[in-house]
Image (tube, rainbow, N blue to C red; front, side, top):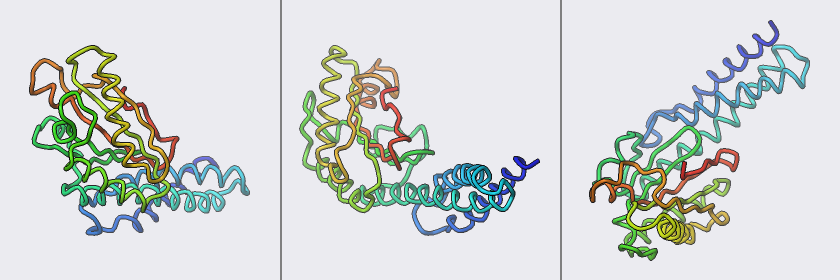
Length: 235
């Protein structure tokens, strides 16, 4: 019964905080899913901690839930805010449609996920064939991201490079790593980003045509609230 009260208390905390953060019209994408997810996780965790370390009653659970929801919601709100700020700076919007990456006209895609924000740069706007040197327009775009990161000193950044399957796996791994490093060099604002070359792993579509291979060539930048949320971009 006491454990049930704890969960109920955390839910109350969540709904109270959700009303504070879900303010429509602040940014382009008003869903604030990361805010809600962060508040939910923080509320439950905070309630459990409050229950176990306090007087093991509903009051302790509510206090812990409120504090946890506030912290989790604040982190989620920051990620929502970052996604919209990045999209504005890159001249696009936030696009969470999983099919967006299949459209070759989408050269930059900013998307929000439960635990991170992803910015996908299509290869054709970034590098010449077999090159890891950024083209001028791409350099400008990446620098814009770097400038914005200075406003979010707690954000952990990851960069991954992806190629098609033309050539050997090892060659493409080295090329994708170099491209990730090139982008990371411009994003070294809050510390060196984590980089990884994925070769032609995690293809968006099968590498069975020139059009599909072009879709698979890309660099992805990941923005995480902390290191514990980081995932392997190649899997």
